[in-house]
Image (tube, rainbow, N blue to C red):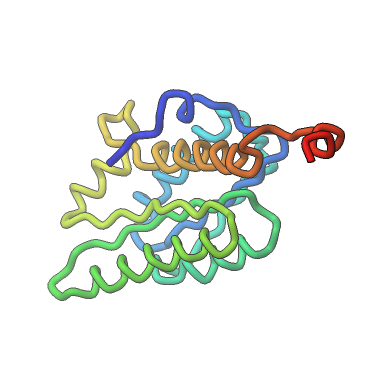
Length: 176
C-alpha cells in the first residue's frame, strides 16, 4: 500500500472542515480503536471537536447507504468508514467486502466527497487486532492511516479544484 507523503500526513486541516466517521457495530471494540485513533489524528491536524461526528452503522454492509446520505447532505467534507469483515467458512466475506469497497468508491466519485475505506478484511481476529492497534501499542494503526488519507485527499481535492490558484477576473479578461 502506498503511504501518504510526509506533507500530506502532517498537513493541517483548513478551518471549518467537517468530518464524520461511520463505524460498524460488529467487532465494535476493534472498530472503535480505529475510529478513536482517526479522531485523535484529525484533532491533532486542527479539526475542531465540534466538526467531528461518529455514527454507528449496524454492520459493514450498511456503510455505503449511510455514507451516501452523509456525502449527499452537504454537511460533511469527508466520510471515514470503519468496519471489520472477518473471513469465515464461506465466501460471504468476499461478497460483502467487495460490495462495500466498490460502493464507497462510487459514492466518492458521484459526490466529490472523499469516502475513506477503513474496513479491515483479515483472515483472523489476531490480524484485525494488529491492524486496529495504534503504533504506540505495537500495531499498524489503520485508524490513523485512514485519517491521514482523508487529510491528504482534502488537500489534493482543493488543489484540483484550483490548480492554478484563483486568478483575478481582470487577469482572465486581459488574457482573452
